View 1: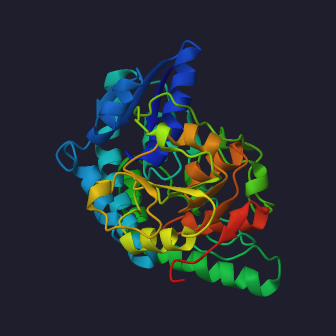
View 2: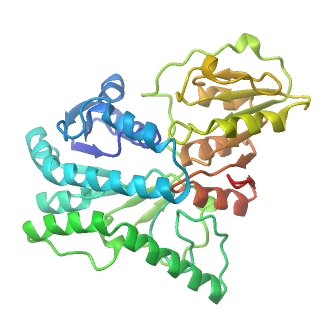
Length: 368
């Protein structure tokens, strides 16, 4: 039996990936402890996993939720910059507090989310093995593949490669504060500073819940990179009441902008207006951003709820309108549900571009 530690952001999309992995390890007889911010604690304990808190002074209970609320009011480059600053603050906490928490818990190996900066340095400083988990789109850089934060389509032409290089240079400049924090700790721990960003990922195994068919053609992934398919499970998810008795049996259009970028009320209005007059039933989830009663009356009077039991509702769904978060995208693919993607920020444009490239849906830009 091995004692595994899990490190990932305390947000729904990442927890929905990491908790099922932890439960599967536990099912196979291993000991599993989550190392993270207090906002993740209720879900971790509800899933039957152990929890060790880090960053309690900077991120007391509710702090991450407030950060995500603020992020949800932004879009585009502004949202990306906010996210990078949050990653920097998270890196400080992981690098400072995680080593002690890991040693006290007796963790012997780590599963580290690809966007948990500093996690690899912590594992190397403790000389314990770790696996990189790609909960969202794989961010391994490759000249022929557009950066994850862009909506650029794949194209092997020389000009597209030059375009991609420009995008990666912009990302390098934007993420410089995060890298400087990590480099400071690496120097203190006498660890080498990676020459390229992908060197911070595991050289034992990198696992991505993307199916290979949802990724642009790759030529330079390491041999220990594995496209596995989704890890989705109802385990660790909150039970959600849903008025199934109100479903009419008409073809069901379901819209959700996820649990973070869901504060743009005009988008909900425009989606409802587009569905008005169709011979369908329209269900809209607000992702917890506000109570349905607080939303102005929408065209067509759709069924509006705060949350939905998404894994169950997608089994009844004909068509999905989504922000192109990775979990929702994969859940739609699992259920054979075509999508219209309206990406808002961070890696959503990149996922939306992959949806269109794979033929699983269409993309509508936010400004349209």
